[in-house]
Length: 201
Image (cartoon, rainbow, N blue to C red):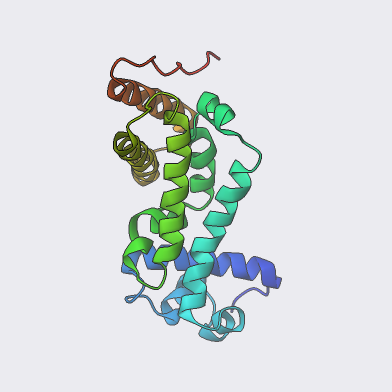
């Protein structure tokens, strides 16, 4: 018998269980019964909080998007360039690893939910473009390419670390990822100034 939880706690529990189920089986391959079983509750409890599977999937994506928005709130582009976006993104990804991977790798293939995934990708590209715009000037196609490429590499690298890495090494990986992206971006900027190195600890 499921332990009685406050509604907010139960909602959060169901979202985490659903994220894992959707990531493993996809939207079409996951039923509300699957979610209930993963959460250790009855299907009735799931339906008390989420009327439809669509509502549940959107809630999964919305949870990680909301956490990302809060993490980036108040951080300007210059501060992000110095700090490195990985140090903002990875803690959120670690909080919601299945939802983060679902948002980046899978949701944009689902027609009913692609808007949230595309919005996230656009957000990542916009930040990358603002950082690179000081170095790549008068070449909009190359700036667009560089921003999308750097953003995609950043997010997919975080997803891969979630797949294989130890959370105790997250800070180390953030530093390596930030340094690697700076070196890569620097190699794209022919004749331009090098991107600043990460600040020393």
